[in-house]
Length: 264
Image 1 (cartoon, one colour):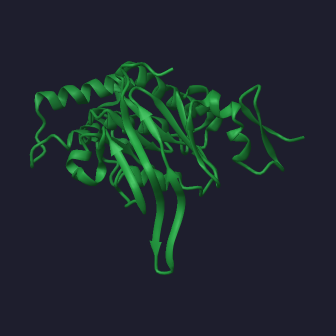
Image 2 (cartoon, helix red, strand yellow):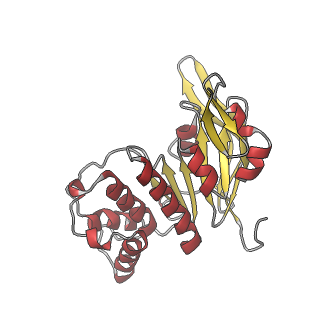
Image 3 (cartoon, one colour):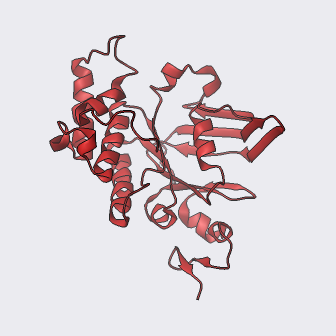
């Protein structure tokens, strides 16, 4: 049951996503009506190529919707400038850093870009938010390390700290556990869950770690070939949504355990 103090952070209304090509329009998903409230950890899952990244790019205004609307804090993103949007949501992508010669502090400081002046000078508030983010993620001891000195897991934590330093109510991550081993996949997603509880921020992430997302998320968005579902994991399990994610010749979803199992 949603708390009365929660409010809608992200909403889509009859959203169609996809691409315009020389041969016409390639629609990836139709009539998406998603609603996410404050303080939630939200997992976006689906098979490879189903359109998860396309949906995230559309929500963040990196890609134009074919039709329909996206609302951030009840304002259409069509009416929000990119600078204003950067103060409403922060984004962590899978693309490699342009330079890994930055220190961790300098990388996290990039999250303050929407608020700094034209020469990028840091105020006391900027420095406070940077150090707060480093502390929340638990990497204060790494702040003077160069990014090329970090492990994949440490670098991912630094990227999340950068998003936290941006101090937005909505954080969106595209596959934050890519290239991590099983332990660090679980560690990062548990970290995201803890951050929603500690900060009240809403965190939306795409992932192939469906079993972990079921255990940790308040809400899940499940993209299938026929429909996009958005609800609490227990409701999605009861409705049999996960049964339709993959062909059943190799794996199937077990309702009792809430996990996928290899068919014997």
